[in-house]
Length: 242
Image 1 (cartoon, rainbow, N blue to C red):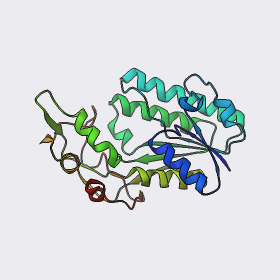
Image 2 (image 1 turned 180 degrees about the vertical axis):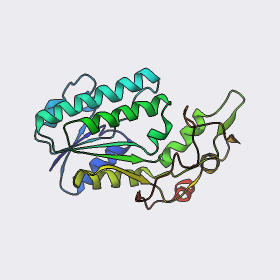
Image 3 (image 1 turned 180 degrees about the horizontal axis):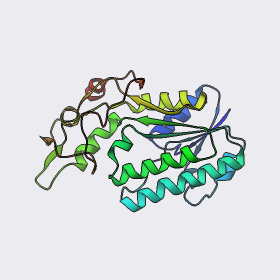
């Protein structure tokens, strides 16, 4: 089966390519590095020719409010149009657990807009709502560091997941039937502040209930998966230990 991975040269995309190829599928990496630009449409129709499934694991190059909205909406519109022309049967996209609970954040609003386009679009779909990746936690610390050097983050719960588990879930979805919206998460729930302390032990962490999460207000339900979520097998403590 031919499966095109939009963003196939990135962190998750490369793992998905490796897994699909190992299982005997024709996994095609589509990104600017391979001559495919979903914002301009360059190379998109050629890459999708003969594909049965398209997987979108892209992330915006800029998180500025207007730029991120333009990226996800333009890219998704172009993908769906090209998929309809190519006869693609399944569109798989990775989004974020709790995105709709955090409306008002520029990034989350952009992800909601992306999801809405997919839901209303012509291609049967699976939207994988993932919790934040283990590998993202040090960046949370960096982004939350003030001029005084203190890292102010929320003590509210989240349920991070390993990038390898995300890739496993994406492959499973790509090889399955369209499933609508699903959730995936790691096996451990812990405070964002505690996760930063573990992953960045030299950080001067301040637990701030009002810190929010990238511009969105959060509580202990915002960033954790609900019942029925697919749970990864890799533990956050093992990631920290490595």
